[in-house]
Length: 99
Length: 233
Image (cartoon, rainbow over all chains, first blue to last red):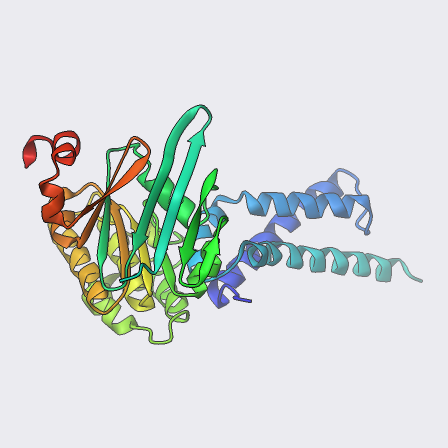
C-alpha cells in the first residue's frame, strides 16, 4: 500500500478534520446531539463527499496517482480522521455526562 | 522493439459525439513517440483513457506485464509510469522542494540534484506552486520527471505556452530520458519541435490513429501534409 508521504498525508488529514469541525459545529448549532447516531453517519457522509469534491484534493489527484497512491487510500485519509474525531467527541461527551 | 506501453482499439463517445473509434498509441523503450492531431481530435482523451482518468467503451491498455480494460494510474505509477497532464501536476499549496521530495521517494535512483540543475529550479525551490509562472511551473513539472526517472512517460502538451528556450530545455530532457532507455509518449501541437524530437509519429484524425513512421515518413505522407501540416511544409 502506497501512502501519500508526510506533507501530502498531513494536508489531507488536516483538511478533513477542518471540514469535520465545520460540519460538526453547524450540526450542533442546529441542535443535533454530539453522540454517535444517525447524525454521525450523516456527518461522515458529508465530510467524505466534500473531501471527494474538494478542489484542492481534485487538483492533487494526478500527483497522488503518480506517487502510487490509490483512490481507496486517498479516501481513507479523508475518512479515518473523521471517524476518530467523531468517536473522540462521543467519548468526551459521555465522560462529561457520567456522574 | 516491443512497446512497454500500449493502448489498443480504444473507443470513446461523449453523448452522441464519437471521439475515438479504434484508436491506439504506444511508447517503446529508448524512443520518443509523438501523437499529433488537431484540437478536439482526441489526443488528450486517448491519454486520459490510457491512465484510467476516463473510461473507454472498448479497448485495452497494456503496460509491462499488466493488461487492463480499466487501468489505474496509481498501479502503473508503482511500476514506473509517470503521467504529465495538460493542466499540470503540481499542487498549488506545496513548494517545489516538497514535490521533488515526494516524487524522488518513488524512485530507486532519484535524481533530485540533477533535476534542480537541469531545469533551473534553484531559485524557485521553496516557492509554492501557486506563486510560479506558467514557464516555471512547467520547468518544475519536468524537474519532477527528471527526479523520478520513470520507465515510461506519458506527457500531454508538455510544450504548450512556453518560451522557445523552455521548449528547447524540455525537448532536451525528453530526448535524454529516451537515450537512457525510457519509453516516451508526447502529445502536442508544436510541430517544429516535436518533429525534431520524435522517433515515431502517430497521427490521430477522425477517431482513428495512423502510425506514420519516422518524422521524414510523416513529412512525406500526403494526407498528413494536406490535412494537418498544411502549407507550412
